[in-house]
Length: 437
Image (tube, rainbow, N blue to C red; front, side, top):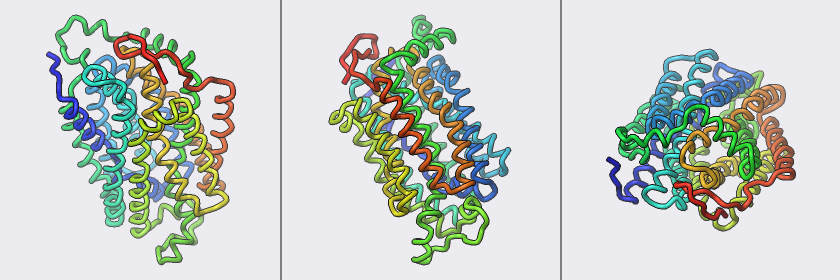
C-alpha cells in the first residue's frame, strides 16, 4: 500500500541520501593516486573506458530503473560504488584500474537517470513538480558541502598513506544504503501486487521508441547535443585540475615553502610524486572550491527564474568554456577557472533536467534521462583520449584550453543551427499539458 509521507521530512531524507554519495575523500587526490604509476595518456584511456562503458550501460540501466524501480536502481549504484572504491585499496596497475573504472561506470549509469526520475515522480505524487529545480539544486549543494568537509580529510589521509582516503570513502558511501531505505518507492512500484504495474512499464522496443521520439526531435534535440558536449568537455577537464595546480601554481607554492617535485622527466610523473604537503593543499583547495561551487546548485532555481531556461543553459556553458582557455596565458586566473568549472554543472543540470522532465511523460523517464547521459559519454570518449595525448605532448593546461576552444566552436555551431530549449507546451507527470518557461 502506498503511504503518503511528510513533504518536509521526505525532502530532508532526499538531502541525506545526496550527502552519502559525495566522494570528497578521494576527489582532491584521485589523479595524484593514479599518476604514481600511470601516464596522462593512460589516465585518458581509463577515462575513455569509463565513458565507453557508460554509453553501453546507460540504456540497460535506465531500463532497470523503469522496470524494477528507481530506488532499487539507486541501491545497486551504491553497491557498485563501494565495491569499486574498495578495489583501489586492494589492487593497482592499469588493467586492474580499468576493471574498477568499469564498476564505477556501472554505478554511475544506475544512478544517472533513476535519481532524477525518482525525485520528479515523487514530487509529482506528493508535493509539486514545479519545485524540481530548487530541490534538485539544493541536493547538489548538500552533496558538495559534504564533499568539501571530507576533501580536507582526504588530503590529510593521503599524506599518511595513499589508500587511506579510499578506506574512508568505502565506510562513508556505505551509509547510502540506509539513506535510500528510508526513502519511499515511486507510486507505480510501491504496490508489487497491483495488476496495473505492467501498464506503467516499458518493454525494450518501447524504450527505443521513447528515446527516438523525444530526443531526435525538437524541443530537446539541440538542447541535448549542446549540453552533452558541455558535460563531456567539463568532465574531461576535471581530470586535469591537479596537474594544472602543479603547472600553474607550482612556482608560487615553492615561494612559500611547499615543495613541488622537480627534475622529473614528465608532468605526469611530477604530479604523481607530489608529497603530503601538496596533497593537503589540494584538499584545502578543493574544499574551498566546492564550498563556493555549492552556490551553483543552491541557486539553480533562482537563476532559472531570473534568466529563463534558454538563456541559462546557453550562457553558463559558453562562459565556462572561455574560462578554460584563460590559464594558458595567465597562470593566476586558474583559481577562478577552477571555481567556474566546479560551479557550472550544478548550476545548469537541475535546469536542464527539469526542462527535459517537463517535456516527457512519467513512463520511461529514467530511461530517457539515461539516454541523455549516454550522449554525454559518447562525446566524452574521444575527448578523453585526445586530451591525454595532448597533455603528454604539451601540458595539462594546454589540453584543457583546447577543450574550451573546442566547445566554443562546436557549441556555437549547435546554437546557430538549432533552437536550444525553446518555450513550448510541456507535459506534466500525469500526462497533462502545462506551460514551460
